[in-house]
Image (tube, rainbow, N blue to C red):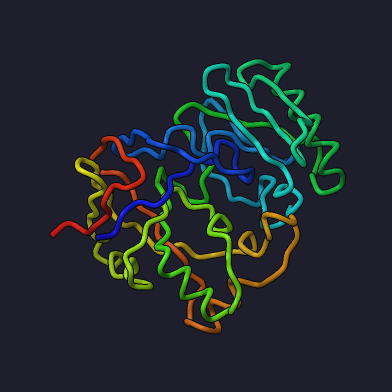
Length: 257
């Protein structure tokens, strides 16, 4: 039986993940605090009182800014502090619920990214909004068997976190998760005892997956490898929560019968 191997959230879009031992899911929502913040280019227009979906090109992101991978970030829920480290040393810290704290983070990234950022970077957040690559609240899932099939073709090991998924699981069969996506709305999938999600679409991969997370450099072309080997550039699926509850590593993942 397929089971959850790992769960992650990404508090700041484009920055490092945080493993989770458990999370609560609500219908129509993402994992709490997943992509809740984003570092926007100074030229990006965003109204926090009336938030709208924006393409990822409006933000700092791994697809174009691989230096972000050299940073390790932790968001502390109790204090609402973001701590940023590089090579094990703290390089920035700020409370994101306070203007001075956000300013400290913005100033760090203005210096760290230098000419890669257009204008002074802005740390954005809006209530009930997620800075996902999708214009809706959703979760991303990766079937580890599909990843292993890509590794077999490429003849190199791949860090699963290159794909920045929320949930990693293993059906034992590569690409089986694609059978859950169709033009009629997608299959319903049960996770654990209570949660039910619905498949939305396959996840088309971009240049962000080319970044080696240990070296913060580009060392391959995964979209091209996927296209050449399998005739598509997809890895993983997006799902939306239709019945909420708690999930944790070890919970079963299977389509509803």
